Image 1: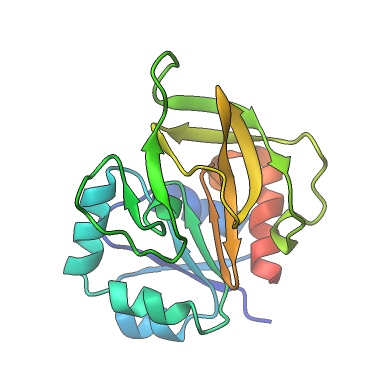
Image 2: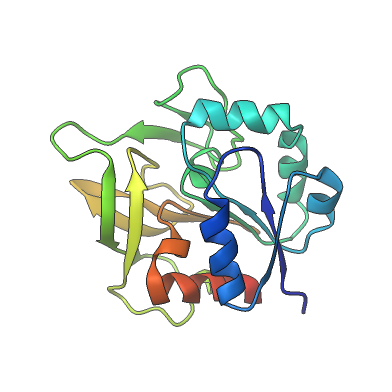
Length: 200
């Protein structure tokens, strides 16, 4: 089984940390914006740090949106991380009028008033649906978050976290997986999740 993982470079994203984490679990990371390389990849990661609207603008400018849409029907494992999860939704309160990739149905919302924003630090992962991504994880594992916006709990939610109220910590639809938390910053638990992704 190939251990190559293509990390999409669209001008935004925590490329160094994700690359280092993939290599640490035995993967062979390839950072690229080349559409042909991405199309041929066996596994793909879409990292993200920054604003929803900027991310979508960069993806359109790079010509990557149609390619990502095609990957949904490819069966190839695809992982969106943090903002990479949010842009897989239909829209976001952060960037009104900007359409997301809409691979998961729903609207990204801003964390409520009265809490520290961004939500930054460790939080408990509540797995509510078994998924190969979580093989070997216990019931009360902690993972690392940095975000000001969140995906509400929906049909595709496979894990939740609580920050005043529950929200989607991870999503899954067919071959598409997404985490609001950063597995590359989540220590041993994050490494196990990334290893599970490699083994899909």
